[in-house]
Length: 198
Image 1 (cartoon, rainbow, N blue to C red):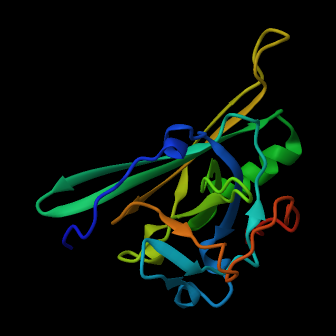
Image 2: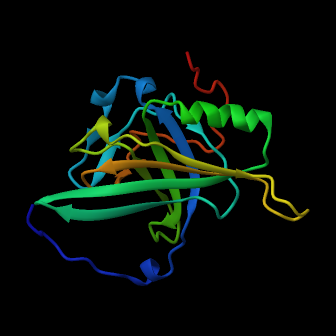
């Protein structure tokens, strides 16, 4: 693919915010209409993505983010994607949900960032799809990588679990186009009816 344009860094780009605001996860087998329901835009966008069976996962403020690290070898580029978030408090309910996550068979994540589009009258945040790309499609899925759980030892120690999901893409994560109305993500969405493990 040839380089078709440059990139300008504007003032708003220098005043960006880090971290993630919301995370929704959907198991590969549960996306409505299957992977063929996903459509890609002309730019680096996903213009439609089935979100009916996506479940919101809340986390401690300031603990969620993703990394996308690209390497090139033998003429091919591979992007390793890692999503992490911290779920506070060790409980039986949390551990039951985490067990489902450890046994899931391929996960897609939709992540809303705190960074916005610099519109002073109506700023809109960015949403990214992890675990699905235009080359590998559904085979770019995320898998449970690790869960570091601790109750701590002192009264003010952390009590919770740091979750990491990882996958391999053939490209950097694509933005989910929520501005055109093809996809709607609602914070405080479906928390219940979690995955059933047979």
